[in-house]
Image (tube, rainbow, N blue to C red):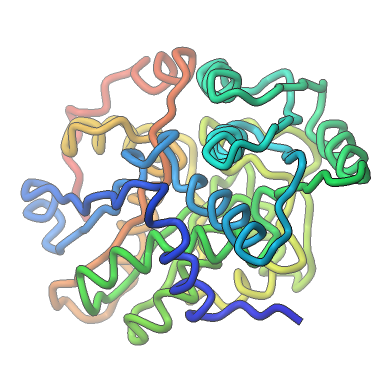
Length: 331
């Protein structure tokens, strides 16, 4: 039976190293001055395909080949970043890929997926796309790469925090967005091993809070339909049976309003000079709320996983519709 531990993440880091970017850690002296704490950002927006998802897809395929299970064809279901990741990773190993997604997929992510050589099939709803992917994997030699609910995918995603904490050393808290839970699960395992005193915190939009509701009820809850959130990277219908137990182990979990997501999408792009998806920016509101809850006034060292930087034109217009830069960040 396969396990999920820091050893899995260490091995994943070795496997993916030749195929991915070792992304930088960036910070803003202005932001640190305004908040009175040191915030470090792992810039996965600079990763290949512009998102952390490249890590999980690459680890999944590399391990399969390493163990003599080379797929003849790869299929995946995704709203965008996972689609791009699987498309590029499959092309690196010269394996044909088909991606199943929704008709509402970001045009930027859809175009990139096809550019990387994958066939893209669109469906009206996410459940329909998921069902089509499940049916496709029954074909001989075809392997399905889940977006998050697989230990090899989770281990690959965990290499982002593993890299960052190897460089930074001990921190007080680590923040990551939560959609299906793959990134935050990998982040939790890496953080527990490399910075055991750190609190690991997941963040999710109030408008797509299935994970938060799942933590409260003690069972996996699903969204009723497509959520009305600008953070499309965490619009996943529900957690998986592998990610849910790890999400339950997080030290804290913060739900973020849309206005705060947009606020930080503007400010992080302005301060860091990087394309930062709303999904990534969301975590900064989590940082602010977490800092307000701390009893100690000591200066904290905080790591934030900036999960991606793929922003559609429509989303960009929505982000910049109003000016939020006149209101300085503060606690």
